[in-house]
Image (cartoon, rainbow, N blue to C red):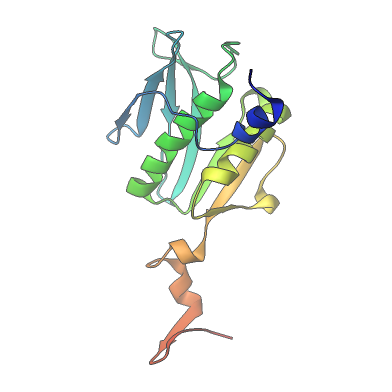
Length: 166
């Protein structure tokens, strides 16, 4: 018998094994299939300003990604674990400055789930509440995780180490 406390501790934890997936950096896409043979596609294009727009959904036989259908498979945490694993691999390779995540149909309940899960597992990025809403979330790269980026403009170096400019 699964105890409710045990189940609640699993929610949002990284202990849920992701599905097997295929990652393609030429198209900035990944695909994976659930145990019920539902095929998903994750798109993570990065524009010239370093903004990654993450979208995922069901991959139809005609190649169109459906972000609106709810499969009712009952495995949302395993799907989120897979998507998060894919995105972390993409972040290691592409290192965007900003990440945008949105839910289909401006679904606030679904976006709340995404936010909770992604915030726990997205290392090196912090949610920017000023650019987020009920339908989408914006994450900015933390300075500490950007050793050759923008933070050098506001940091000086001396013989003792790094000293912030005042």
